[in-house]
Image 1: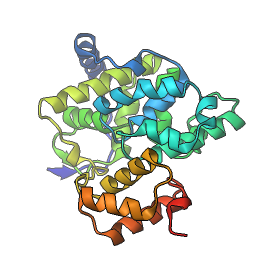
Image 2 (image 1 turned 180 degrees about the vertical axis):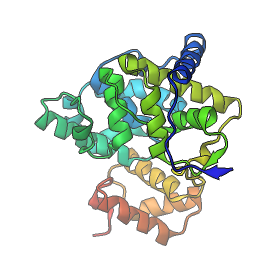
Image 3 (image 1 turned 30 degrees about the vertical axis):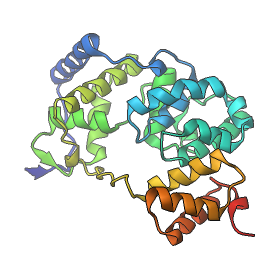
Image 4 (image 1 turned 180 degrees about the horizontal axis):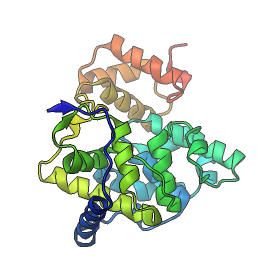
Length: 280
C-alpha cells in the first residue's frame, strides 16, 4: 500500500474501455428513481438536497409528497418553516430543510424562481457545496460539470487506485474530469453512481481509502436523534413547552434534561424551533 500524491493520466483506450463498462452495466441494471424522470430544475434541486448524506430508499418515500405539497420555489418560499420540516420528517439533518426554505426565498427574489445554471452562483446558496452545485447543473441542465460523491469515489478507487491509500478528492476529481462523457453528463452520472451502488451491494467498498472518508457516528442515542425527536414533538404540537419536551424526550430516549435543554437552545439559535418554547 502507498499514498498517492500525483494525478494519473489515463490513455484514451483506458477511458473508452471504462466508459463502455459503465454504460453496459447501466443499460442492463440502471436504477429507476422518480427524480430521474424529470429535467425540471426545481425538482432536481430538491432531490439533490434530499440526497445529501441520505440513502435513496429514504428519499424515495419523501420526494413525491414534498414536491406535491411544494411544487415550485414560490410555494416553498411562502410556506412556514414548520410546514416544510413536517414534510421533511424521516430524512434527518433538518438543517437541510431550513437551507432549502432559505434558498427558495433567494432564488425567487434574485433569480425569478429559476435555478441558475451556474455552479458558482449555486454555491452561494445555503447548504449548497461544490459537489451539490455541480450535480444540480449536471442533472438539471446536462452540464459537463465535475464532481464526486460516495458511489463515484468507490468506482474510481476500485477501478484505478486499488493499491493506494489516503486518496485525495483532487485525484478523484481529476479522474472524473478525464472520464466524463461531456455530451451526456446527466446519463453518465446516473450510470457511474449506479455502478458504484452495484459494487457496494457486492461488498466492494474501498471508500475508507479516501481522505474525505469519515465514519458516520452511531445514530441511536446521538444528538442527531435527540434533535430529530425534539423537532418532531414541536411539529406535532406547536404550543408545546421546553418542560413538556424534556419530559417526553427523557421518557422516550432516556436522555438527561440538561442535555435536552442544551439541544433545544441550539435549535432555537439555529431558528429550527421557535423561541416561544423556552421558559418565560
